[in-house]
Length: 294
Image (cartoon, rainbow, N blue to C red; front, side, top):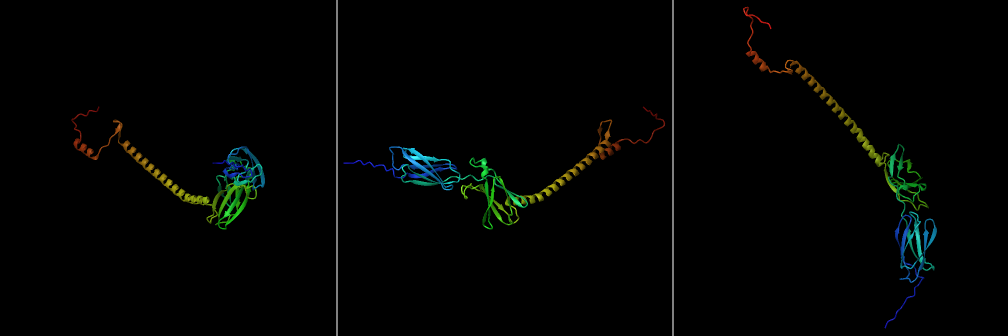
């Protein structure tokens, strides 16, 4: 024997397994299951989105017969905090989940330029990579003094640079730049951080490296200049010696040049001695020998 029991659907039960599937800067995807398996009719859900920062509410309606429901909440703000409540349209028991959207990215290429009595912070505009960012919103600049263990708010700017003065020698500072917070320090962008190391000289680490490289250059450049001058003088001396040797050889060759033969004749001392021994000595002319002059 057996008996079939069919449970009566209870529309007062809350949606099951409500959770966030994915969150972006301006949207969030949530998912839940119906209060009971295999609904036999369309079910109307009320999705209430409470902005915990702005203190505002929005309600969306979702009608479906699916056991598993996936819904995308749009028009959210980057870095926002939200409380999402899902329940049946008859105001049954509810399920809720908290969602934090992704904040705006940190500014890129944050750099420090050291001047005589101040420094300048530079960075790239967030509008180049964040379509949700408006330059009129501006940037916040904070400074942390590691020696005093104090964080200070320096100000807000709509430019891509900021001047910082009155820094103390021997202190190390960390500067952060981020998209300005919208409400009471909330809905802020991700901060870009850069360390400014005084090193007891009033210079940041990059400036100190530049100074050290400048000192090395001040030593190396004169040495290289002296080497170049020495090499130049050496080349001049060698050139002058070469010219003197060339001139001496030319003069020597010209002194032994025979225009009849068209070449220069050089003889050793031994050859000259031999020719003198073999040649007969002329002592004089006899009166009875006629002289013929051609």
